[in-house]
Length: 148
Image (tube, rainbow, N blue to C red):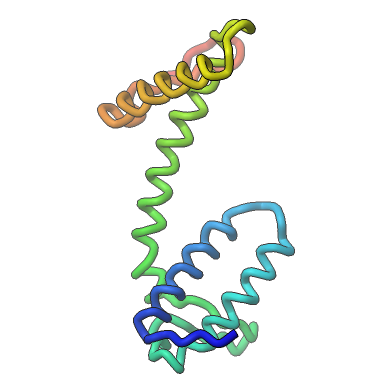
């Protein structure tokens, strides 16, 4: 397959590859998958000189690899930070709502009913976190003792 790209399109795809590697690299499983994706990314990054993108890519003579450099990271990490922030609140709201709904649910409830309860409870948590962040969150450890 032959693909033609402009310099700008190459940079956009390099950014997507960097962001994808960042997400995949954060996991602890599937080393084979991560390695295969890294090799594909290295192959793509090797094309940087053709697309005048060497300001984003470094060739590492010590390890023989090709990777995003500090400039690329500084350009793209704000997107990662925004993603992490949004994901944190969404996952926290979902897990707390799921805990509340499954603990309080009766075994007779139909799946659609449970889904609606979950959605409403998640929305309550989202509103609380938008207003107060984690200020009202308290942890109660096993044994019932509250920490301040």
